[in-house]
Amino acid sequence: MPSRGLFKSKIGFIASAAGAAVGLGNIWKFPFEVEDGGGAAFVLVYLVCCLLIGFPLMVTCIALGRKGNSNVVQVFDNLGFRRWNFMGKLMAIDNIIILSIYLVVAAWSFGYFIEMVKGNFEIGKQFGIYSADIKTVTIYWIVFIAVTAFIVSKGVSKGIERAAKILMPTLLIILIILAVYVQTIPHSGTGISYYLLPDFSKLSMRVIFSAVGQAFFSLSICGGIIITYGSYLSKDDNIISSAAFVTIADVAVALLAGFMIFPLVAFLTSGSMEGIEGGSGLIFVTMPEAFGLIGFLGSAVGSLFFLLLSFAALTTTVAIMEVPVAYIIERFNKSRSYAVVLLIAITLVLSMPSIVANGYSDYFKNFIRYPGSEASTDFMTFVGQIVDSYLQLSGILIVLFLIFKWKISSLDLEITRGNPGYIGSATQKFINVVLKYVAPVVLTMLFILGFLSTFFGISVL
Image 1 (spheres, rainbow, N blue to C red):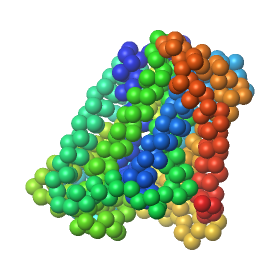
Image 2: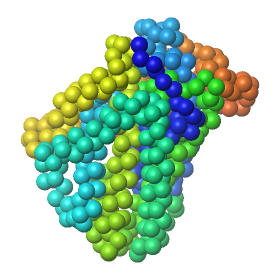
Image 3: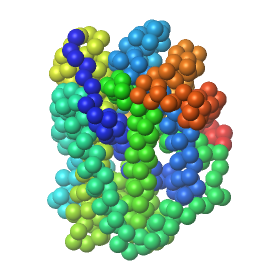
Image 4: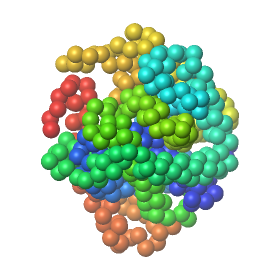
């Protein structure tokens, strides 16, 4: 069997794991979750959730990976719980599906970077036409997966770690440059006030669970990535500090994104902060217009923005691809190159319905209509919602596995490797309490509420 490889340094693991966590959602989803949740009120809850739920789960997944010392399927075999390896199989499949839809958005981002370099600010008004142009999108898809595959094919230290050490600092530098620059445009102060001043009247149970969900997904926990990366972590490394640095890096990027996005929104709305759509509409329709209005620096700012998105997407696609690649290598005793090429072929087939679902094919554009819904849901959105629901369920299963099978005492012992003072510490008590009593209840409620709301239109809160 080919050598598994290890991260050569702690900073390499942190950069790689943080790169996996820092994705497109941090740039466009987080700011508008903040807006919907009452500004700083949501931010405070989100930060608490990252500490209270995200951090202990991050620690758990790293420890599972390092102790099992294998891919997401064989981790459970190596721990002595073969019947539970169905979770790993679902994670491997889930990551292939995620990659198939994530690469489509990544292709849009890279294509927009090219358009901003050209100074084509009208591209936002043509997003429907652009996303339906399967030839153009497929070309950029191929470019993006080729870069992703090249990095993954080089292995853990020479590929993933080396790329992360370049991409993550570059991503942060671009984000800081943009966040600083947009403070100079008109109405930026209004945008920052909107972002930082809390409106506690909007703080409800729905907002709180939304913050839990954002913390859960933005950290990329329980989907197999952190378990896989944890399996490449040295036995001498401190899991607690590693998990803390990854969590802090992810939160920092999300917070910086708000400092970048909200001044731009205030600039576009002349300070009213109204009538701006979030998500894809904000990024691919509205932002090019904003860059066109900035002036002679518009092309440079727009290019940096979509380069930032492309880097954020790349660090994530590399991590997503590594999960099934590691499984193929170790389960079927194949070379890394073979596994990567196989994944490219599988992903291309799975990506095509998502590529054509954005206007080219009426069938995939109007793929399904949920009970009680008046509008159809396209294939790409539908698959994304299925994946999100599974990730919520996966979090529940991992916590149940920890409590009833592997046992929290085994987690404690693994953490002491590289951190001999952990047993008896306040950190240990905090993590144990969260994993035993808080995480199971919160994650179960999050799954039930999210499932009912997404697929049946039932809003309990």
